[in-house]
Image (tube, rainbow, N blue to C red; front, side, top):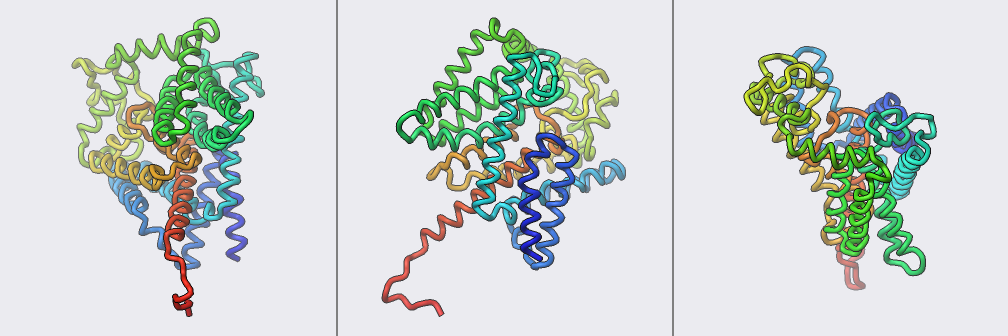
Length: 422
């Protein structure tokens, strides 16, 4: 029975990237089923050791506090907050169950590479012809939408780019013949696609990822430097090659930064801080920003004005840390920060002394997803949240395998005079 259960768990794990890519509703069902199967397996085996993991305890504390904070807001917010346990169970299931076998992790790594290639090729096709494979045109501001109908290609590709490319580039750079220049061209192509897509925050986060890559993988610093130079050259010629991309990446972005308090992002930030200041201990429960944004009591701008009134209201504050503040107050914000740090610590174990390219790529993906100074979709919003929890679980599984192998290598080897185990 357990063998059949393990096979089902592996099949669901390998299917998850495909449904997160296309079919977010099915992806939700898959990850819920994975969590339930994991819990059932743990109950049948009476094996709950994973609950002693540091990140699990912090995650459960954050989740429980969010549920408590959401109860006063009504049944709907409380149920939605309680439902977040599905994502935590998914991460635990990947780390402790379905990705325990090296072959499973290798298959998932290859799938992520194919997904990244698919998004990139669809973006390039749209750049060349004006439409993607499904007939969708560019976004309203000229952004490349990749395989989607709306501008959603940049965020997932910026996360997938590093675990997809770094293992190949890291392997090729150390070889002879045509592979080192091919690895360099591959890196340049990845960065070039991110520039052409024309989405500001994904490109900035890609630059952050390149910096972290150069820090952890010294042998790739030359590749990173050439990639940054290529990005700069593309931005320089963008007015002629892709005017919409230049307008979004340079003209519009510089204008927003110069007048940030009066920009939509600045007004949303002020509104979230006003909601957080009014509910500093418990927040206002799950989905607080959407529910309270239109309340005139929180119309507080940076200059003593109404901060844009109800016209600026959106579904979430476009930042995970502001979201945690509005939903669960300062205690919830601190617990959420502790959870992110615990995930990064877990995924990054041993990287400084032994920086494996795949593990570095997974660490970078989690880091840029939860980078605090960035706009983002809601923490639990599919499909981007699906990539976060999938890559986090993958990174934790790789780190666990590395630490296990490292501890075994450090065990003393038995000698002839050593007693044999009984």
